Structure formats: C-alpha cells, structure tokens
Image (cartoon, rainbow, N blue to C red; front, side):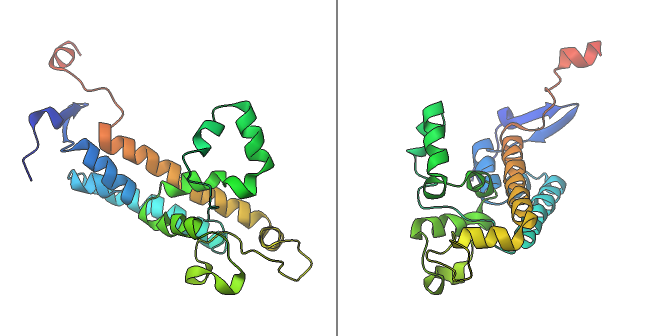
Length: 203
C-alpha cells in the first residue's frame, strides 16, 4: 500500500490529522463502527465509537427481545427511493408499509456488519416460524397465525413487548444514525474548519 499523500493530512484546530485514504476509511467505518478511525490511526476515537455505538445497538436489541432488527423483502430495493421523494410515494408506503419496508431498517443497516444478518434475512423473506433461517435471528415476523388470539406475529410482538418493542427499535436505529456521523467524520475529518497559517497568525 502506498504512503498517504500530504493532501490527505489536514489541520483541525492546530492538530494535524492524517485521513489517509478517506473513501476507504469511510467504507471501513460503514462495515464496523470505529474501523475507519482505527485505520487512520485515531485509535482513541475508534474505541469510543465502537463501544458507544455497538453498546447502544446491543442494548436496543436486548430491550426489544431480539425482535426489533429486521427488514421486509422490498426494503432495500432501489425502487423505493423515488417513493420517498413525493407525497404520493409516501402515501403508497403508508398503505403497504409491512410489505414495502420498515423505516427503521435503513438506519439499523448503517451499523454495518452487525446488521448484515438483517439484510440477508430480508432477501430470504418471511417464513413460517418453524422454517426460519438461523432460528429467526434478525428475520421479519413469521408468516401465519400465532394461534393465541393475535391476527399475526407482528401484532403478537407488539402486544407482548409493548413499549420495549418501540424503545428497542429506536435505540438500534439511533445507533445506525450515529455511525452515519462517524462515517462522515472518517471521510472528512473533525467538524471544525481547518485553521490556515494566516488565521493562526491573526488569532
């Protein structure tokens, strides 16, 4: 691997940061929280981001009893993107939300590898409870009637878990959104505007 060029070394508030290959760092940050910063040598930040984001994601997953990280078969189809850009599209999504996609899934997917089973399960699709892949880990609600008075499995989950289902969904989604900020930080560096030599002299 070639040595980082000088153009990838930037100064933020008087501290020089070597971003190395920013695009590759951003890709690593997407794959695993903190991996991009570790590659750049920003190891303290890498550990902080990994612990906080994965901790929040796992906490939400546990609170939701392992039922809150899932996606429906059409969730990650490119054809869903135009629907989000118009009122008519959002109305269609609202009418078919269970079949089209679960909005939390997009945020949860930003956690990277820890959420990859969700993407795999979305490609497999809902199955009867005794036919689920990986015992239903990160799988969408099973098809069929649970046989306990609830009309479907999603209703059963909501009735059994009540607020914990929503709270777990929120925690795991926020973890993904936080990692999105980490990806931006790995690509562009810290938020403060770089201080040039002229500014330092006049400060």
